[in-house]
Image (cartoon, rainbow over all chains, first blue to last red; front, side, top):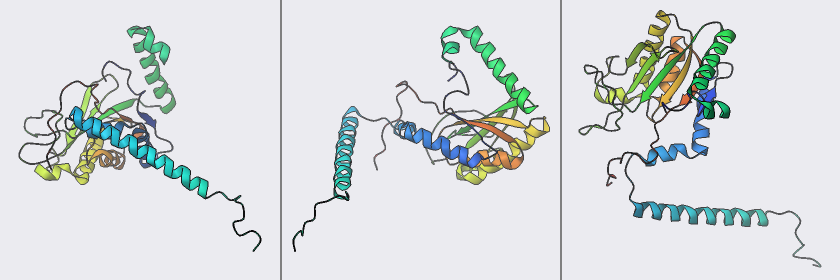
Length: 87
Length: 162
């Protein structure tokens, strides 16, 4: 990063001497932006074949997780019609 | 920031100088920079800084710390190897912490109080080195992550077969 300005990107300022919390914030930002797993992935070379397999696996997993969360949210609704009405 | 980036190098330099001056005005002492390099194969005799992950015979990590002034003048340099740890023990958090304390002591000897930390690489000593710096008595202002991410540059080594 010699060509870029320093201390702008990926920087967290320390508040009131709380270095631990700052470090955790930095880690959280990096993970949320997908940088940490990118670094781990770049350690070893990844075939294009393996890479497509992994991306399709991640897409399918994301779709299935979202569908499941949608279903659970629907089932946990409170205003339901009374199933045993009239008994 | 956008204007500074698009304008030119002279504007960058003046903006950077203004930034340092602001720190000096607020804090009262000059801010120094520390570069923490994790995942570097360290040889205490050769003092080469090579960014490698694993040594061919044994998997070994290490942490190196270098204290640099605001004008990129090197001031102090310690590492797990210079602290007397050998081989696999260099790749531990304790070794990184002792390296941090030693670097802090050296830096305070040269008259540095406040410090900006730049972390490079993912390794076992990433947090321990910063903790060692604070334990040694330096005040950390900000933590930057400067892990080198190639935009598809060099080809990394082949995948491990587990």
